[in-house]
Image 1 (cartoon, rainbow over the protein chains, first blue to last red):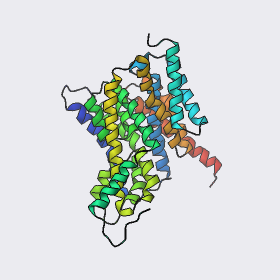
Image 2: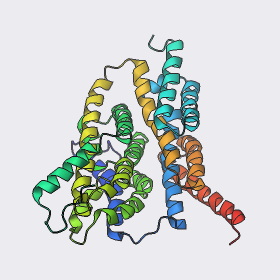
Image 3: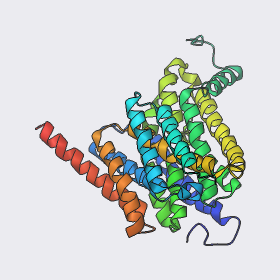
Image 4: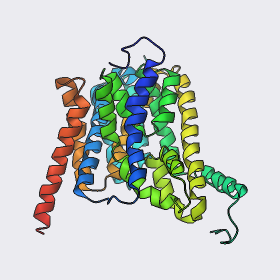
Amino acid sequence: MTFDALDTWWWPYLFILIAGWFATNAWRFLGVYLGGRLREDTDALVMVRALATALVAAVIGNLIVFPSGALAAAPMALRMFAAAAGFATYLLVRKSVVAGILAAEAVLITGLYLIGFDG
Amino acid sequence: MAEPAPHSPPNASDYRRWFFKGVVACVSIPALILMSAFVGFAGLAREAGITLPQAVFMVGVVWALPAKVVLIGAILAGSSLPAAAFAVALSSVRLTPMVVVLVPELRTEKTRPWVLYLLSQFVAVTSWVLAMERLREVPRDMRTAWYAGLGGTLVGVNMLVVTVMYVVAGSLSPTLSAALLMLTPIYFLTSLWGSARESASHFAMIFGLVLGPVFHVLLPGFDLLAAGVIGGVGAFLIHRLRKGKGAPS
């Protein structure tokens, strides 16, 4: 049963509720239930954080290497270079997320302009 | 810090006042950065073929941005409902320890559990960071009202941001559309690195970045799960090995 498996208006919302709301809120509710009983530095939590980080990073990797829409038409090398430039800037400028975003976007837009992307 | 007089029980106007202070607390750099990430999310949702009402619904019910980005990634990959739910759940386990840390700060002996369950809906990185920073300045019995103002406003404003940007995204030039779609990956590339508590998370991030695209080709439909599990467990093992060498105890 995929997101567009059923041709009804409510199926995508049910899909979002189960795969989105339930899958995130189960953890939030568990957190309320556990209250202050869980320690932050146990090995289990380190493992959980590593899993979650790798999963989100996998999505990010896919969004850069296999993007959709207009970004897919931009050259792969430029996408990777822009992301690398943004990340390097972030590290150099006191871990500023804003600086990283601005640098990546500046490189991407300049690159696209230079290759005549808008035709 | 205006602690209310200890003998006067809090009344409705106190709650309203602190709720409003929570609303105002949204005006902050983290909230601005989050809004830019939701600008990117709107473009991403649109490109993934998700309708505007569905995208806004997603913001309201899921809220946590990594979970939504994974959900859209799963939808794009044509994952089945159980696989999508599993991937989103794996990406959201970190919400539990965040809520566990937040709840003792919000609660008084008189707080009813349903209030906490309701407020936990607002927990995601930005509101959590703002709350952990500022809750200390809020009188204890006003904290739930304050956090409701903060969390509710962040969710509401970003539902609006997504609505506006989803509509605007259709009329952007190809270069600006590409720039819009670049916002989400670069936002997470930087903020995910910054939020890592230990080296395990840094290794996990590098493994995930590489394994995601690799498994996208090798195992379509299960790429996120495979990259998450292999990358996460691998990073954890490296973390253990390094810790073992560094500290013999």
